[in-house]
Image 1: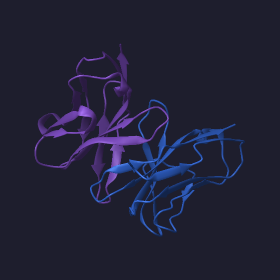
Image 2: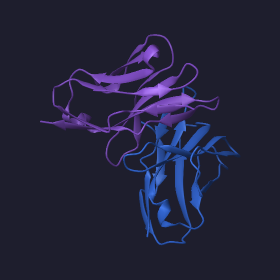
Image 3: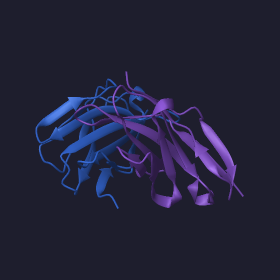
Image 4: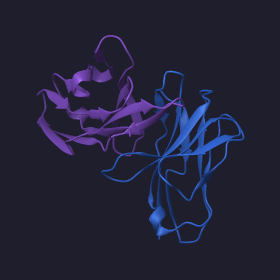
Length: 111
Length: 113
């Protein structure tokens, strides 16, 4: 069973608010990822990290930012949320074999 | 550019019937291939993966997949579907030195009694 946790699971907020989606893993993985998932669509990589103090933007442009100060923690922040940010955000980490371990997701709704 | 195509948006099968979910990929080198399953309200879980060797790989929950290089395919199969298999299934290819993973759009499986 994967040990990767996301909070909150569900969040409804108003436009212009700042939000942070938390992601933590206890497996000691160096690589961590944030994917954005809309219904019926593929997962899009928006951020990834290969270790502490390493962050890169993914294939899908996103207004969010991430940080990696500790190995186990990879939070995602939106400074000013908009309705276009409404989506599900999935955090994952990977081992040396390339398998991704996913959290249960954070479903964000911006009104 | 690397890509993954899952031609079927949704499939309905009867419980006990066999299942095949299709996946085609585009990738210049030898791909690392994966199938993940996502139940409603959950994250994704790995079913199986192919890196090299035997082109028929076995996974969890009775699933298997066959890598066919000539067809650029990695189809997922199960001989007898159970109602609990109803979920969304994603094919994915690992790419890049940093091992980024690209996903298909998914196939939703419905199981009827």
